[in-house]
Image (cartoon, rainbow, N blue to C red; front, top):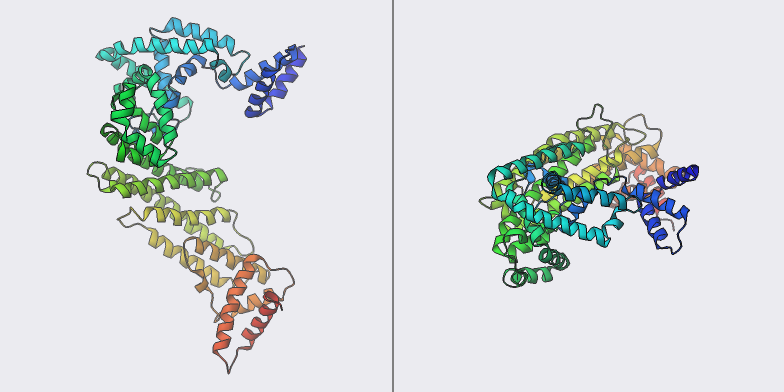
Length: 526
């Protein structure tokens, strides 16, 4: 029997979590139960709950689920803003309550949830009526306990100190790499308000998220919010209701919704929303620079070229898109000139520009130089270099609407172009290439890199360069099929040659004439 259980546990351990979750639901739906099925369900429950041991704390956190923010970057002190409510913050509150007046309830909840989770996934446990009732009891106990702690200075200070100490320890356990911003009394008041007004807030949050799918719907809802929607729900625009627009910014990162809130929302919502958007700009600038640092291997003992796996490309694209959206919004609302917040925006941008230009640009110049010297094959990180040069162009285009100060881009651009043009010329005259195909392939790669920065690389090659005509002629004479890049390159040279031959009617260069005839026969056969 033990051997059978071990075999079941071993097989279940190999399943991806999503497959294990699906298999549990399928077994649970079967009418007939058997010992083997019970053993499989227990093994599946153990696997699915393996990373979810703090059941009671998770159940308490579920009370705040619609309003939580999960991006840990927003826990940084410089990006902190009203409405950032992370699971770590709620967890800290429960830990302190469970060690205080809610000890007996916490012990009961630990026992009940531990028993239920022994053979069921936690998500299934949380749906059970008895557990829902337990969660409601936990909410009621917290609502009764918190006001007294908030009303007296000494207990409030102690509570905040203990919560922040626990959060710092949790941040180390999670390896965040920084200390989260300290919780303040207003954060506790917001959590209490959410608990007290949950029955009204949750439907409104769902309504806001539905409306946010369409700008007209959200605009109409926001315009009617203070005098209509909130009044009917018995909520003032201040207090816990402030979480409604901020969740759309902090968690959903729906910056269009933020702009609509600034335009149509209640006055009490506007400044907190603007602050949230400014902090998100800082967050986007920070994440971009951190991701670039990872690409460059900053801080590594050995840097083995550029490291750009697809997930990192996705992160950079996503954050650049967010930066673009925020700068467009700030341009529309003239936030950069705002007397109170414009300086913060400019500071965030300035720090990002200085870091990227000081760290990324020199490495890109060095890698372009390395590619210029790579004769018979591209450098190992050529694809990453190619992508990053294109990213530089897109990043620069995003910043153009807001950068009113000089940057090092022009110097960087000129340096890269000089390196690439010289290497491109060398492809047709330098020794060391095994054949014309390798010369041409190298020239095409270098021109591709230049084009990523917006250069017109068609001017890099001219007919006066005998090495160019000789190379393309030799490549055409070879029997191997032409690549798409070779075809495009040779076609461009052919167009130049034909123009020159038409211009010189009475005297034609024999080498050029021979190339044109060969190219016509190879590229444009009758």
